[in-house]
Each structure stands twice: as structure tokens, then as C-alpha cells.
Length: 427
Image (cartoon, rainbow, N blue to C red):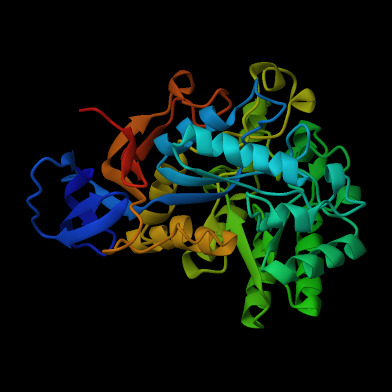
């Protein structure tokens, strides 16, 4: 007896309405009305059915920092947010800079079984920016790593960055750069500008991000390799990436949900919940990021989900850790900032949050169009229903969401991974 799942009456991202029959993890039939006796049914009459979301930038903290998050708790947060694949950043303890550590993270994801966890390998040993990590061994490991990043740290040495870009060419990998010139951001606490001066907090200039973006684009062009820019935050950075794409340079870029919505004005509260790396920028920057995501200059939305224990955030601003949670609220924020504003259609959301991140990460079983024969990774969202974010009801182990108490539009009603319902809102 084969297992069957029937999604009834959902609206596809192109606006059509269909039933979807799934058997043994594969989409078997799509039609206006399907009869499937004995199938488990999911009512999608009020939902838009999207290809399962893929996050290219997640901090799952395991191994070593399990008080913040584990692969299991992060996976539960992921499916609650509609994700079927997460990319686990390398700044764990020990750092994911060897085949052994990335395989450990990969297997923890397999054991949890709620979604796919793809480890991201470090570019340099212990994230120190000096010696390249075991890039080839990680690529050849069971985890088949294709994305490498020292996220949280910039690969600041141009020679090391060049070598990394050259190295990953042999297996079609990509270097994901955290663009932050370290000498320009020593002790920086928030965006550099009038507000940082008023608050007496050391400023983080936009040029510190833009200088690295420009340098690395030129390096990627020189060696003809793939470069991905993590969490772009400035209007100037957008213009540099736009310039590069117009010249056919192999660069892709991401924006986080919080940088699409929040601004530096929130730092006036001195609440460390708003302390994030890179920092919240100006309203002008936010608008530039939205336009860039709409026109494709920025390729994807990535959460930069960064869980921290309470003591790391419930302290003075200068002592607090950088970072915010993102997995459980990302799709609703994209709905609010991009769909309801008319900047993106749902088909474009599918591209920015599923097709494109899977393509950049080379995750071949993800980011597929909803079609007969495709693997059944699906996300159902009711775009007209809203919810109030409650940090105490989050699936994450941490509580550092900047959206606590805020009403957001768009409720993920079900997540389907390999044809199995891994999350569902019970009516």
C-alpha cells in the first residue's frame, strides 16, 4: 500500500487553483479535482501553494552552542516558517571547517528528518581568515558541501579570498562573503550616521560593506568564479551589484527579512534586540533593498536566523550579541513588504525564496516547479490571515525576535517535505 497525500483546492503561485496528489514523495497528479480514496487530505482552499522554501543562511549553532539552538529545534522553527531546506552556517564550536564536522551536522539533519540540512563549510581554518579550510574534503564528504562562508567574519585578506574563489571552481562551489571591512568597523555598534552620533554608539559605515563587495566582485571576475554576497544592507551595495550583473560577473546576493522592514531608528530604544550584524540601516537603504529584490538585482531572501540565549541579549547594548531570529517570520515579512506593496507576485516570491536559493546552493532536489514528477516539497500560506508574534510560542530554543508583539500578515498553514506533512496548523 503506497502512501498518498492530497492537497485540496490550493491556489498555485500562477493564480490557478488545483488539487495536488502526492504519492511516495513525488507529485503524481495536478488537476482541478482529484478523487483519491484513502489518501490523507490537507484542505488548502484558503492557501497559496508554493514550492518549499529554501534558506541559504541559517545559524543552527550545533555543535557546541546548543543552549541557543540545535539542529532539531532549528528544524522545527524552519518547518513552522515553511522551510524544507536550511543551510547551516559554519560558526559552530568546533567550527565546521573539516569534513568530520560538516558530516556531523548533515547527519543530525538526516536524523531529525523534518527538512534537509545542508552544512556550509568555513572558508578559512577556525574562521581566522589566514589559512584555507579543508574545502576539497568538505566538498567530497557525505555532506557534499558547495557553499563556503566565514559568516560572522569577513574573509578580509584579498589573496586568501582569491585563492578560495579559485579553489571552489573545480566543483562548481560558491564563496558566500560576509562583507565587512574589519578595520573600518572595530567596535562598531550600529549604522554610522546622525542617530549613532546622538546615541553615543560607535558607527558602522556603509562603505565598510561596500568596499568588500566591490573588491570581491572584481576578484570573482578576475578568476571567473562564483561569488555570493550575504545580507546586503546598503543602497550603495545594491548599485555595485547591479553594475556587476550588467557586466555578466557571476555574483548573487541576498537580503534578510529584517533589513526589508526595520531601520536604524529602532536603536533609539537602546534595546539590544535590534542589534544585528550587519546593522539596521536607513529608510532609504530599506527602500533600495526592496526595489533591488523586486528587479532581481538581489536574488534571494535569506533569514540569517541567529539565535542567542537570553543573557546574550538581556544586557547593555554594547555587551549584547549581534543577531535576530528569522525562520518563523520570514515569509510573513516578505508578504508584508513585497507582496502587499505590489513589488512581488507570488510566483516571484517562489523564485526569491525557493528556486533561486536552491540554484545558488546547487540543491538539486529543491527549488523545483510544482509539476507532475517533481519532488513534493511544498509550503502552504494563508496570505489574508495574520498572527501576532509571541516569543514564548516560538519553536526556536531562543527568544531574540525583534517582532515580538507585532501583527504580521500571512500564516504558514502547512509544510510538506518529501510528501510528508512536517508542520500543520490545526483548525
